[in-house]
Length: 278
Length: 272
Image (cartoon, rainbow over all chains, first blue to last red; front, side, top):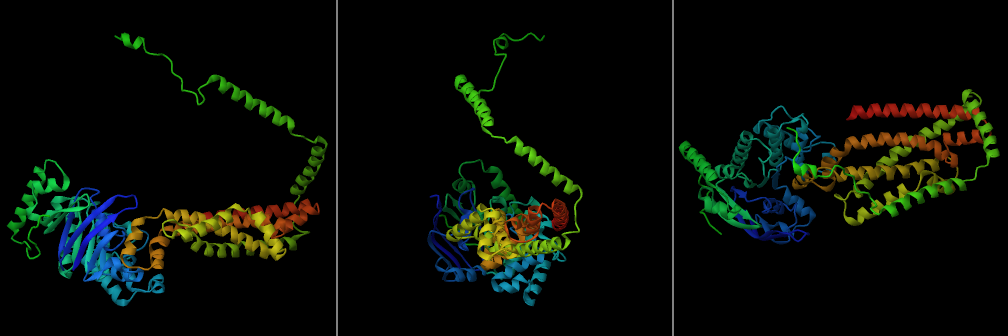
């Protein structure tokens, strides 16, 4: 569904942030992107919806080359790609409802959006999403009056308002406490499954990543150094991605959570791809 | 018990900050030169004491006029002057603020392409370099005496003032909100409405009210060079040595400026 071919990004400063990255994401597949700070995780997902302009390679979304699009073609393509941000990126001074409806801007004319005259279907969808993410009754609150976890729920609902095929999720839990982080990850995964969405999730918490995401891609200095199942991640893989460190504590807690999952007897393996070391 | 260590005895007991100019000779020569320049400078000012004494008499007449302000003899002129000034103020602020918004967006580095940025910044620089009085003299020459020239002057000045300060505010908005809105596939104007306007709105309102204040005060000044309004009335009164009427006009100006200042402050507090 999404295919990156030899994607390259060189910033004007000369830094090569992505070195010929190739990646295939199937329909409904959710993958975790891990790697040290500065490895190019954010650059990679921002290249997909061209918030960052790639300097080489192609990006195909359902067969359409996103890099070749002009301004209006790009706007149309962006409607199909929802994005969730680390610091939520909500419009702080506007209401929760306006934040949700802003996900429909790509489908709405300027004057209609200026007077906040959105379609009835959009409004119904907004109310139903509010209920789904657990924020019913909050539509008239200002976004800056919400807590971190609530804001991220608004961010998720806004992305889903676009009726996207693909979600780009940039460090969704980095500003949240451990419990809220797990709730938010669970919510994102559930929603992807309900709607059959593909997603790329940037995440720097390895334990959280391997617990929730079946497929993990490891990025190091702009190159893919691991692409495979979360269960195959061990000390060698982590050293390969992050460099030398004592990984015992992390691998142990990964094993512990994996054991909990298999005890629960519920493990969705249909999305797992065979491990392929690059 | 408090016997100092041997090493402590040999440590320095004094410390001075190092001088900006380390050579003491050069330093003292510079001080001496500065004092000499000051003495010579004061010596070169020519004071005509006879003229100053005459001036004191006129000044005293002015003070006496102030003590007995005369609102009655020129009242109709004062009313017309204020009507003109207030009209000039309100219309020029409204039009100036409206026109300043596109200029502000064009002057913001994060929103405008370079060539638009350069055009808008040059316009802002021009508008802010030229003092209102100079613009007023020029526009009075072009459009004749009267409040229309004043209205144009204040509009021009308002655009420069508002656009510069708003552009600074726009450049400091949170980029993440811009990114998020662009990522939804929203158009340029929709991004401006949701991500930019919502963030700069309180400052836009505050600055507009502040500019309303300034425009009223300026309308009194530019009247002196012929751009109509209360300034023209004041100028006529001074030319005729009618200090009592002039004092009345100044008192009314002070009252209105204070009222405007107080009410706009109150409004700004309510909005934020």
